[in-house]
Figure 1 (cartoon, rainbow, N blue to C red):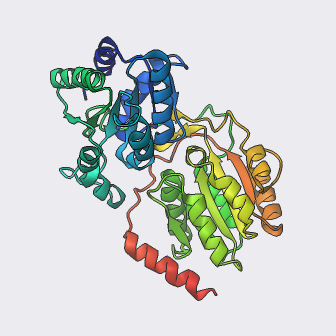
Figure 2 (figure 1 turned 180 degrees about the vertical axis):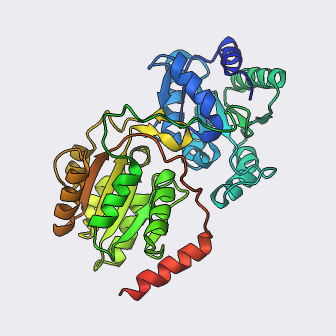
Amino acid sequence: MIDQKEFHKALRHAGVEFVTGVPDTLLNDFCLYAESTLSRDRHVIAANEGNAIAIAAGYHLATGSVPLVYMQNSGIGNATNPLLSLTNREVYSIPMVLVIGWRGDPSIKDHAQHRKQGELTPVLLESMDIPFRILEDNQNSALETATWAVSTAKETSAPTALIAKKGVLAKAEKEIMDTEDSIFEMSRESAIKCILRTAPEDAIFIATTGRATRELHELRNLSGFGHDMDFLNVGAMGHASSIATGIALAKKERLVVCLDGDAATIMHMGALPIIGVLSPPNLLHVVLNNGAHESVGGQPSAGHKIDLTAIAQNAGYKTVGAVVKTEQALRDATQDLVASEGPSFMDVHIRKGIRKDLPPLKFDHIDSKNCFMNSIKAIG
């Protein structure tokens, strides 16, 4: 891994004074350095990548400087519209530097949900006429490439990109977060276990991107229940509640439980009022809120700083009117909301962290989908 202090220094010397984006595993140490050294009005963790592009564009319009936007390559989809219809040189011609974590790099084995995105990352940038270079794990080369990106953005008055290979802007292994001093009683795993035990046995579960999928899968293994009633949304961050809504609309006779995350919920919060208007009575939307982008390094989210319960209630959900913080409160809230006609919503505050001995998630995506579809088809 290159020296983050020197890399950020090179960007500053080239003219970058504002940084925004969505954290990524492959950019973990880059993001953490920005979080620890830049002020709140110079480093913004955005809701999604398109949001970050627009914030950066606004900063440029106000200052004339070249901002930097970081993201995982999966976020290019969220960023495409503002990149093409706002920053493009044929529209408003706004310069910025994109730093993109290269998940699914064809030269490195990765999970199925990253492979096609990894293959297409250079292709998409070329198609959008965004000049790019690949960041290698070489200090001198990386600093030179950073300077190139900023100077080219200035010269062309348009976006440029740096594609970060694994191990360049993040250590090989993330540190396990210490949660012993947390003020919150529940871990994510204990909260999921509580909901599994309290919800009807025939409930359908959809789990969001990240560690919720791993923990739901392992809890099913430990219980011997099987996985046929679970859909693990290992990609498409922010869309678990929409997937759950589609299922709930089609299977009104069964409870559908969405195990969501705070950053994922915030990423596409526009789904909440749509769910409220559709009012699927059998949907229970649970946000497992640790106030962090935990699976990519623990950078803070806005989850503990906003009132998600009030937002959901005003969007049309039924709620218990308060944050849920204890297992007893979670059992009571689950029972109450399951007994009522939804859609229902719970904001469950949990501590950060994950069991050190939790097995990695290994499953066949197509087999899992087919088993899920056959299982819920059989229930009516």
